[in-house]
Image (cartoon, rainbow, N blue to C red; front, top):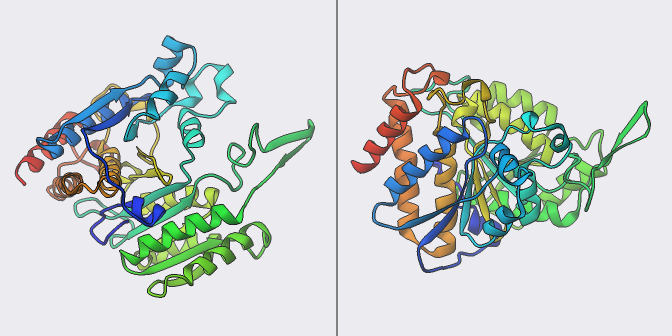
Length: 375
C-alpha cells in the first residue's frame, strides 16, 4: 500500500493479504550500467544502515554491459535463475542503446526480468519534497501502471514482437488488453487508494480506442465498485496530462494502461521536482523489484555526481513490500527510516547537481546515512 506519508506496501494491495517468512533477508543486487555503478552501491549502503542489526545477505548478479563482456549476453540465464531464489531485487539502470547491435532489438535486461517473473504492477509515486523546486509543489500521487500488456511491442505477444511490417513502407502494431490484467491492476490501485486519500482516477482513451482502452476503463470501474470507501472518476489521457500540469496536487491514485502510465509517470516525476527523485516498484503477487524511474545517464557516469534518491526510495518501497509478506515490522521501520532521512536531507538543502545542489553522490549518501543513525 502507499500511505499519505509515502509508505509503500503493494504486497497486500496485490494479493489482498500479508504473508510471513523467517530467516535472513536475501536481496539481489543488479548494478547495471552508467550511474548504476554509483547509485546501486549507495543504495545498498543505505539499506544496510537502515536495517541496523538485521542481517541482509546481498547477492550480486551479472547484468548489462559487464554481463555482455563476461557472459556474452546482457541478462544471463544464471542471473534469472539466481533471482528466483531471492526475496527481492534492486535493479540499477541499463544503457541498452550502447550495447552491441545484436542486442539492441531484443528485450532489455529489465524487460526480460519483468516478463520472466510476471511483474504486472508498476507502482510509481510522484511526491514533491521540501527543499526541491517543483512545478507542482503540492503533488503527492501514485501512478499505478499495468505493466504486462497494452501497446508496447515487447508485452503484447506470448513470443516475439507485436510490431511487424508487411511491406517496407507499412508498419503495424498490435495492442492487447485482457479482462484479467485489467482486473488485477484495478484491485492494486483501489487497495492503495483505500490506504491513502481514497480516490482513484482511471485514465483511458475510450473516445478513439473504445474496444481496448474502453475495456480497461469499464473493468476498472467494475472493480472500483467493490471498494465502497474509494471515490473513482475517469479522464482521457490527453486531458490527464493537462490536469497534472495545472492541478497535479488534486490527484491521489491514478491507474492506467502500460504506455499511458509510462508517459504520465515521467511527466508527474518532473512536475514534482525531478525524475531523480522518482522511485518505482515492479511487483507480482509473489515477487518485487526496486527500480528507479530514470535511466543510466552515461554522460555523468563515474563522476560522483549521480543522484541516488530515486533508487534509495525504490529500495524503501521494496522493504515495505517485503515487510508485509514476511510480517516483519523491522523491515517497515527500516523503510521509514530511509524515507525520512532522504526527505530530511533534501529539506536541509543537501542535494546533488541535478537538483541544484553541490553534494556529490558520496556526500549525499553519507548525509542520509548519518540521519538514519540519528533516528
